[in-house]
Image (cartoon, rainbow, N blue to C red):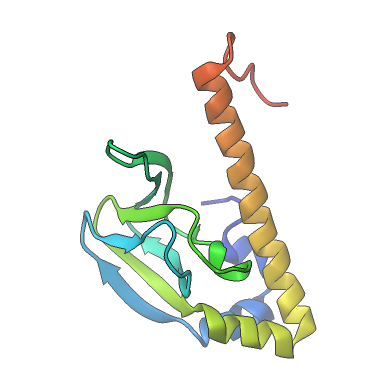
Length: 152
């Protein structure tokens, strides 16, 4: 993936190395729930292989898929912003291998090293901005009379 929001593109090598010291490998089977909307956001993941769908609870219906994320992408940003509760849910769409990070440990490291903390904050901010933009385009495609009309 060549997105500027992947960890390898967003963080310089020194910051990546610091973050990866806190990582541990995890696996999820297809259909496994990684997190649930409204629950405590105490960890996050970077996908190594597979795909994770972000979804939104819809009362009386199946959760609505919002976006699918894959290799190199950050799963979860709610851990970075108080009150640290998930805004969406996440489900493995295929077998997933990922690096998992303890959110509190990363926040402590960010507080101890302001340069590292700024780099992580900029990275997470870019992820949020990219996902908001993608959501806007999807909404325009669904509800605007002429679709998104292309890039704005």
